[in-house]
Image (cartoon, rainbow, N blue to C red; front, side):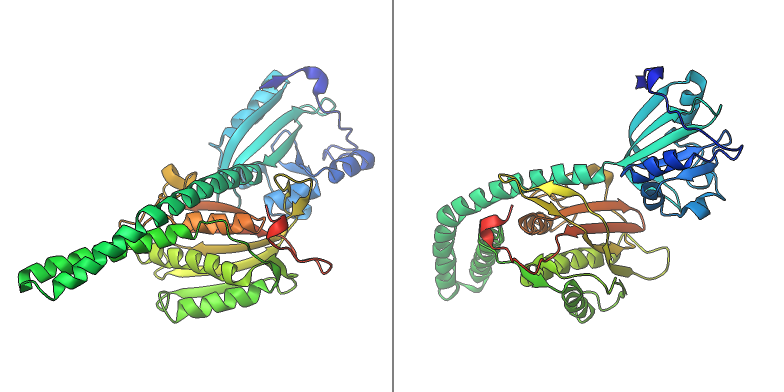
Length: 389
């Protein structure tokens, strides 16, 4: 997309190193959008704080690097830069993916603007659209969860009662038929139990009140780690990287345990799948917490906006998730497991949605991350079902 030349950047430079004037630097530094200034050799000459956070490097570190040190030369970003310079126009591109050892970003919108006073220099802005897409997916998860809840209500009424009769009849037959027929009766009883268990799992999607209060997320993670280490993940390495200064989460402890235990269990199953062997030689799950300036979102149906600065991450070095299903991973009945029901992650998404949070997943072979963004507990209030989203 090309924009008129009238919108070209006018960044005054004070020396051949292409540093911007203090006033201009101050204005760019105040922007929440990542901005960097590249010289004719695509070396960094300026980066605002948002760019430092986006790139994961300080301005002093960037000063010793070129763009090619962060992004592969075959990236579409270099084609965009060439188009900006050759046409002397503003160029934008959307949904770019950066996948290199130093920079891992997906779904980024980039705009390049030529700098009039400095031939060859240009200003690049980066906007990570992943949070916005995560919010859109979260809304879709909620709608899907409500559909499952309605289905569960119907099934509970129309299926569970007949199942009880079928199971009871099968039990009676077990004691009156021959040995060969007894196996069939047991099969009927077991299948009735399996269907009933599936219906009961779907009933978990029902709209039930939740009470949220101050929760120490590190105690939740430690509890999940102990459960995993003494059970399904006893053979795996579990690494903890926590920010000890985190404030309490506004949440429901039991439900957060359920969410994180589900994610850790999925990670363990992915690592130990028969078709995969980690390149590192061992299976590893990493539990992380961090505080960052998250997005502010408006709670549907209200004017209240929530801030989501607390990030909880579950990472594994498993085989990764196929790109074909990543966008629908949290939809009901979507699963990669041969015997899975596809309800576990859908329930996870529903619980996080009820907490007013967001979820993101980023996956490739050898590294899959589920990130949960949660609100902070405030001393002067605790939430009940009345103000949950």
